[in-house]
Length: 396
Length: 224
Image: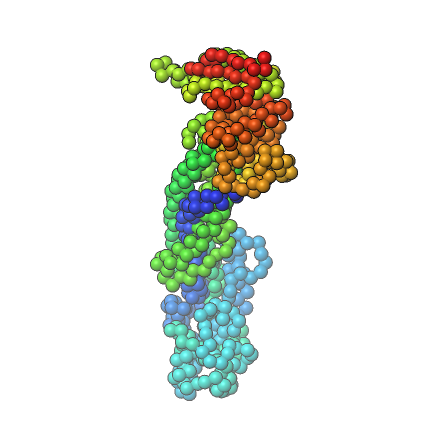
């Protein structure tokens, strides 16, 4: 018979007691796991929202006077005259953006980091109605405008294709498969965009190459949107560097919503984790109390075991084994209860939050619970072994 | 084998001072069967606990096989309990969650010998409990529980068996059976010290030590 078996036998006899102790530990871990789960989901929610803000840097020619919007943010005006940026400046812009981000994030990678989305705007007439036509890099644009949905048809697949904003499609009575006459060239409409409430609804999108050849603007672009979505990305600094080193362009940093939101999130997280820590400490004393009475109850058993040859260390080991089992049980309950807590409380803290269970937190929960249970056990167990064997029988 | 020199046990001090044992001295040879007798509060159990290292004395010396055991540290006391001295209690003191055979195995568990079931069954057979080996203490009668406790005491082959009122909780018949078992163990060479206040019980012993108010008032040696 091993000591572990002895412990398991004893636990089975005192199921209720052990369960109470495990629940005591579970309350502490529940709070921690609940808070961790909520803050993780909250962070994801913020990232989600941030993606909707789209680019956080935009580059335009030095002169402009046409209303331009970016996501829901007004970026001033852009003049659609002969004021273009040479496409070859893109590589220089990329170089600066990547270099600054890598410096800021301490990355030693050669790959591209920032997403650059060049655009060419032309105001033209379709069926005698004035329309803004935008040339874009199909693959890049879709990664920046994650909210883009095709309501009918499909996304670009080749050249001489067009995507039409929902309001424009309605106004011009355009549909998927229709031919569109632009500056003497026919294009096929492959898809209609779902309404997004942005200026995209009023525009027609073409692949950049097609756009350039249709309007004879080879090698020219009107603006570049840059997305470098990270908390620490020095967007303002990148803008400054681009303004200083490239002629004829103006880089504008979109206000640091990302930073603000993330800073707030970090503060909320710290506050909640402090709260969880306090709960854990309070929980620890609860568990300590349970353990003290559970061990006091067994002073006689301890005496018996010592009388038949158990050393103090073996007695403490018995209680530590028990604490580990209580910790595993408590950690497991705490994980389940904490996830449930997050599910109930999460939406009250972050609107529209989606709580998912995080299986990685199960071992975390068990580890916390085990450590708490062991810490709460060591002192009373040690104390109990200090009682003289003869006295331990008298105490009953 | 066992030698006590001026063993005293004093509780408290000053006005509240209580002398539980007052300069007790005696010695026992190997193979002895001694009964410590006396009224309640005479210090019998305290004496037994001091001999077995379950309690500390205030003054004096206890020697087991020529070695002092009264001043041992905890670790050394553990090794005394693991083979030199074994205890049998009035209330049996079995672990309730363990079966009879597991209770017998308990001392071996603490010695790190976890695979000795056969040895335990042999001893259970010796105390006449083969058929009850897998029963929990709550399913056993008082006599059966005490047999388990005796088997538990024997498993480490101790040189000295200490029994504190082993038949105190039993009816006459059961008590006699247990005493017969002690008699048998003594005949096999085990050294036994038994605390009792029952003269009938004490009759089985070869030596009777009479205690009163913490002092030895008489020693009767039937073996002569």
